[in-house]
Image (cartoon, rainbow, N blue to C red):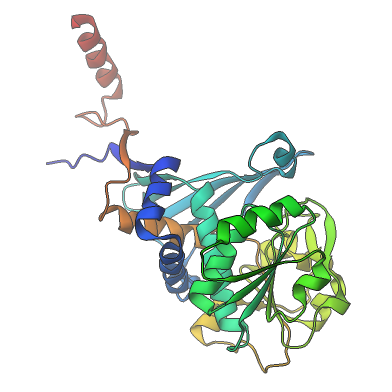
Length: 351
């Protein structure tokens, strides 16, 4: 008997939020991080390509596909910094997971919230392997939509205890302070980027402005720091002064994409960088010593979204936080799609 594959689980924004609250934000991030680590360790198995991007003067719309030969996944995502002034999200997303065997989708989900979780999880994985083991203080520069997730991820996975917050908009820092109250983190609001990084072991920059910016200058970065530069994620958008890159051991997700979109777009195309997945597999070392400056130039890659969708599919077996969508035409005879339309016409006429 043919299985019914026409109904596909769909996780709406409402159900995603309910699922996250049911599990707990920190536990969600930690679980997704485990899936990311698993997939990074089998990195060579995946199809890999830089995201397919359509740029405009207002922003960018992108598709991020990948497959491990068993499942196929993609994410649709936009980046429109101007949206914030209009009361809209700068980033929105949805994603799909499908069976390679049949080509049928097996999961459709919102990914605006899920991407925030996976981005935080990826930063935490990078920090876990690249920062000094005694790191306790995070400087979080850019206190917008991603900030709280980043702070909680590094607390849960890396043992961060203190977060020093800075944003050019004091209201964003105040928002972040309110949202993280009761998290167990010691929170310090700072008035400059320089003040924020004083005494910090880890610095995460997650700003939204689509421009060549210098959120961190060379004199601000001391020996032993680890930097997560995750706000520079499209051509023409950077956060770090070039001299910081020249002093750092640079780790990336997928070099062909990061050279287009990351902070390393400021460097020659053949400038040597290291790939994070190789650190996880033990092929290359991570931090060499406590005085080294390590930089994760994170732009977000399709395999991380794939990991998040895999995690979500597995969680759905344990929850009711989804609905079934009738997405796939499924005639009794696969050759008779038109006949299915005629039978529906007959049913409508008898009603």
